[in-house]
Length: 177
Image 1 (cartoon, rainbow, N blue to C red):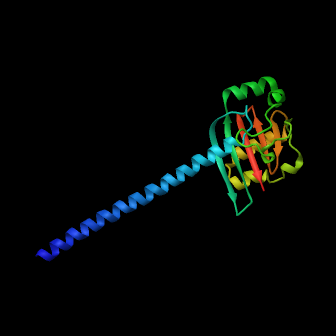
Image 2 (spheres, one colour):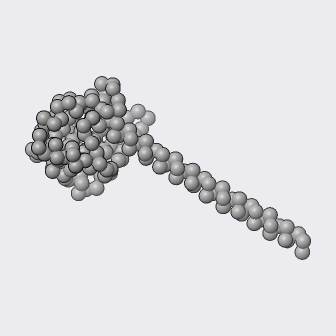
Image 3 (tube, rainbow, N blue to C red):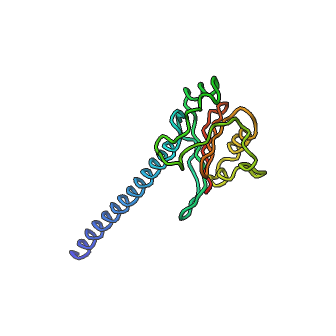
């Protein structure tokens, strides 16, 4: 009788240790994932020009390989930024030409223009960065419609386009390359 009791105790200790190890492992995976998502969010916000303030994230998604990738980030415009855009239009954006967190020319934006965007950025199937992001069809239609009609503002940077849609209260950043 003594041997089965010892075996049960050993099995109980091993089972508890295994359960603890699994909890610890999955807890660490969750922490790594959340840390990555926070860093991804901050990286994307740092790529926005000073003066363009997001209030919340709608979507951050994309695909990337070894060096190239494509995707989109969609934020809600802050109330202040939206109000200024609706009141002042492109004049509000004159100084918003360099990313807040990066000084290199890769993060320099061309002068802001009112939509529609040039045909090269849209096609019959939509804007490629939105495909890569796996964006919801209704949101993609709203963005694509804003890109093709007056009332929104866009600026181009190397391998990307930044679109501000005051009527929708959205900031859309897309990259492809």
